[in-house]
Length: 167
Image (cartoon, rainbow, N blue to C red; front, top):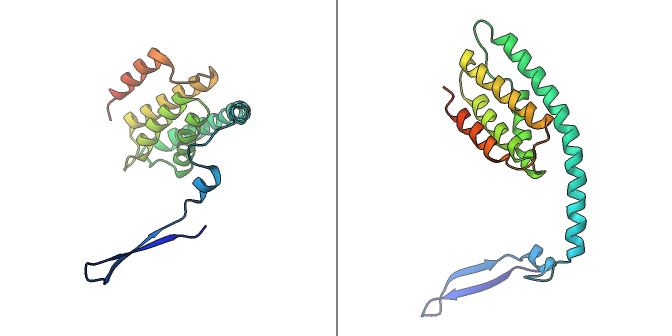
């Protein structure tokens, strides 16, 4: 489908603007307000459930990697301190995005908080390292117990406590 154009003219008939409306190719292909096949939605939900199970396997691997990165960070932080390693930041960024996609909202929420701590400028001192380690332990617990959704009141209490951690 081609773009639609229209010309705006002044009272004297001079062209003052040309308005170009790009085609709505997705809307044109899917229809507007059309019928959605319930069977297709069921198939999509079933596929997502299978992917969520695969996500748990990947989350277990990610946690092993994150724990190894924490151990290396802890060893490197003894003394002068160090900045957050880029691979750790990238992994936490990915965990933050993927958790919610597959129904593991807590993984996303805690990974988001951890990402914020890791993204702070400067070297990592003892207090910041303790906060990072605590978040990694919480993510491990969420992964081990396969906590789906938002985790309810217990998770909200835990998040409230974490918010009160010193920076």
